[in-house]
Length: 150
Image (tube, rainbow, N blue to C red):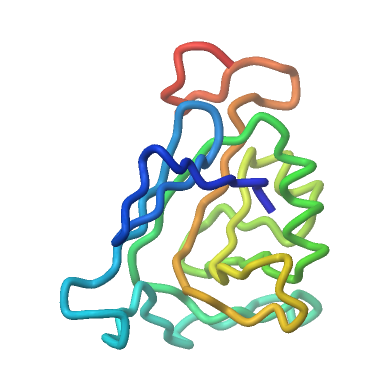
């Protein structure tokens, strides 16, 4: 979705660092007790009822989430849709059920992390990502974007 390549010089035998956009990295590290330990980064519950039954229903995630900024939100959203990994967390008021809504709100979410080259598209990890645009529709820097230049 994000075209996030590994940064070999930041990795090690027990970790991998991924370039998550301009001046942003995310490092995954093996659990100190070994790779067979189950670690959960999600906490799903079905506590929100969808007022509009024509929209897809998603469970609420009460686990952690991360935010990252991209320069081309439309392209990222299209890639996520093609892979079937877009997600709407009903806990939050800002919800993007479509590309148009994502562009209006300058964000969308994914939670299923998959290898796009894997034919089976099996979930590697559940970790909610709030994918934010660095810019608004009119090209101005988005208000919460921490990057100095966009």
